[in-house]
Length: 219
Image (cartoon, rainbow, N blue to C red; front, top):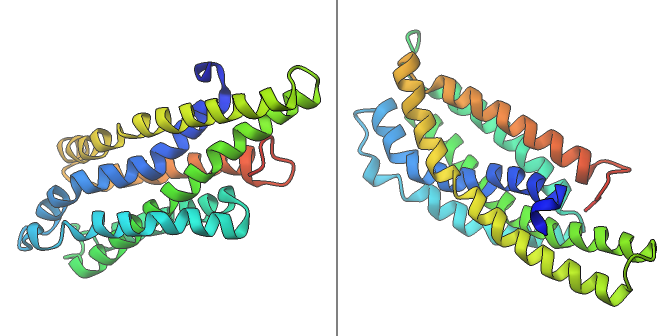
């Protein structure tokens, strides 16, 4: 039944932006360091990003619980990720500048931290969204309140599992986007511009459906 639920697919897309980014950045970070900064040994630094992302994940859920709104935390996460990607672009080497590894590294650590926080906040959103949706069905007399709660629990759990599996594609798409960008343009800049556009879409979807006043499933 979750494949018929609009919010399943919206949250899959948003979770691809948080958990998918974490997986993709983790998978592609060593290659990216080696490509952009050949003099740097990626083995020394590549593990730090996934470590930071894993450590910050619980804080996303904790902050969302404290503020009572996972969507607002997710909103700020995507704003921060867009800014961090711009930072990464500014520190990459180009024809006009040699680049700065430490600036690039710092911006990427911010990306990892934000993706971890976003993992927690988006995961908090899913059960709230489906509970609200099924409570509306109960208010309309379509099901009993007890059945509505049961259905919400079942569907929320199923969506959480499916969205996690869907977001795993990020582990494939992000490294592939680096390769495609390098082959097409000779640099990874195009890939990062694509990330900015993708995060902007995630930001708009989250704001429209979950964060703004009067949102369909405010959470």
